[in-house]
Image (cartoon, rainbow, N blue to C red; front, side, top):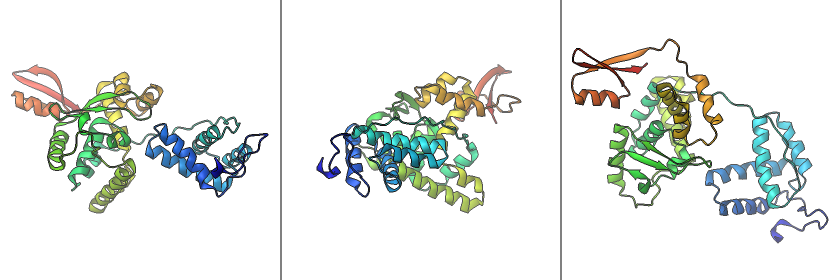
Length: 310
């Protein structure tokens, strides 16, 4: 504990930790040993270093005073949560203030714009990664943890051990994504327990490159607004719009708290719905329509009628 400086015997508080990154590092090492994700630790490190530049981490009143200058409940919560880990590690007595969290509106990109970006990706590995995110709505961190042992290539299933303490689930890939994944696995020949995709930060950086290329090709500024995480929002709203089953959406997303799922219901409208219609004479045609997102309606004059929401 010498790396932290001497302790005040009466209060058990470490003396000023300003300009002593080792104090923060030891907290991060402790959290890493408890299984915290790398992306989470990076975020905590950034926030604690920020607090250390503007407040005395040994003095919770100093920290609270600085946090109060932010005037943004979300930022205040994030900083307070980060400091909470620090205070707990050093047994610093403090009571975390209550900040009312404000929900940011969910922005859902169109399927057309998502498909344009993915379809024009040249890297097979990136194309597969984005296809999986779009097909299943998993988080980038969950994709990063995906291994060959978590994939059933025959049935097109992936088994997700959820991030954020959510529920594990089994999700199905669409035909084209599965075909691309099989091709990628044949090229990579990965070990059974090898992680297949890049870190969330790298995935996001690559996505920004691809959306910028899409903007360069088309001049459409909407591409620049699509974040990688918006593929999860797209999946959730599309699934709810198709099934109208909020519990199914909750299960598919791996949420433990349904309140995290219900917010998607506020951006889906079922009024004045419009559909594309299609017909099939053969099993092959019917299968192709179903794989394209059409749902069966009825039989009529020897034809099978299908529909898909516009």
